[in-house]
Image (cartoon, rainbow, N blue to C red; front, side, top):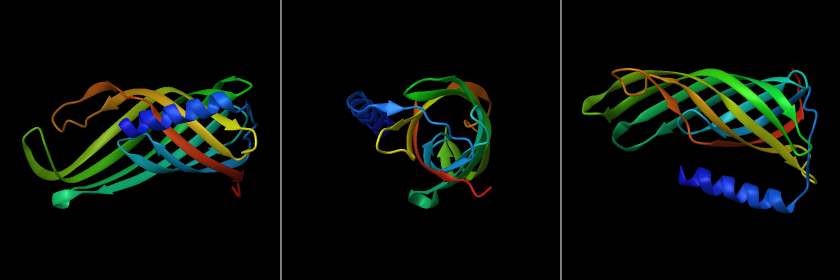
Length: 170
């Protein structure tokens, strides 16, 4: 969480000192990372048109005492406003996590499945001189059954990401 806030602050400081420009990403594939589900994940983002794109997310963590976590998900992105310096988009998606060896709320370590559905708003922008490197941030709200005993709606903090774009072979 602290790393996300620090990274976002650095991006905005740099952004305030460099001119950025909007970009048509149609047919482009971006590879990078996003901090979206529960941790930083590898990400592939492709824009099928100037307004519509998709993103696939995959990540894993291995921690102390045999703790393991695998995450996968996908999102649809829809540009709702094109600004000179960025695209503002709405997003909706679904993902899941599999936890093993995690003790939560006094429950013994076991394998647990977590379903997650999100919707939110995001921005993506490019700096002049870095035409293929994007920086972005999202705020999402969604459903999650992460507490292993019930479900609820949660509001995420800001998630950040960086993608490098090139012509898509797809």
